[in-house]
Length: 326
Image (cartoon, rainbow, N blue to C red):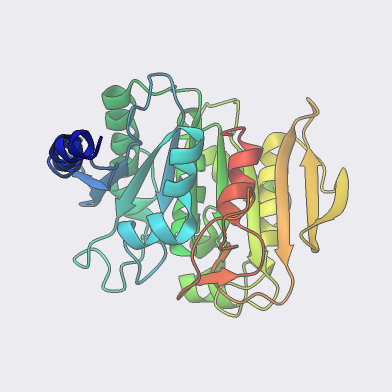
């Protein structure tokens, strides 16, 4: 019996070594999805860069989210800081991330205040529209489920895209941003940001309607996030956004829903059809930045950092739920 056991030992050791070697020498798993730069997406009159995130194995017919960074930021930082790429993996959609170049704006701000960049068919607005077309073609995305969002100057450019290309977007999300045509109404971008422009709801709405002459709808729904202690883009701009887009949708300025989400005032303004036309989150005590809620919980996303503010509410998650992405 002793001899039998001794005779078995080399066989057992050989089998164990073979198993270990098979694990060590096995091919590495396919790398996870990462941010990719895309070139040749159109005439690119605004001279922007295009980046995108496509989850591994993404099927055809999925939504597309366009996410526009703020000043001093870039596509990669905004992708991870907001949580959009995490949600893309979880829910199955692709993300387009335009990036500003210093040759256009030294502070890397999208030029939401330059007339040459905010009109249909020209400048930065046209470049972003071309990115959408390229992405839809490459991933066979659902053209009826394209969304646009951005922070600060990216929020201003979000309003531009909703106004100049309303047929391309089902909805938009503006974080600490500004209404379309605000700089012209206020006289300068800085007056618009630090004080706010004085316009009636009809005047605000007329600026949007003039951006796409003859267009009668449907118009993108709008969600706005704004810190009450934001001294870079004053909260008056959220009021102006509500005035502008309720007017465009033919909704009144009396909220149909007034409650709290994560402890913050939340309002919903419904259009004539009963759908949410405008939705607002007023983040009490928050300064200038993107609301995030780092963690592994279902409603958590984003990473705290410069202009990514941990307020226990993740804007990307709330937008994704409003847009039925997941």
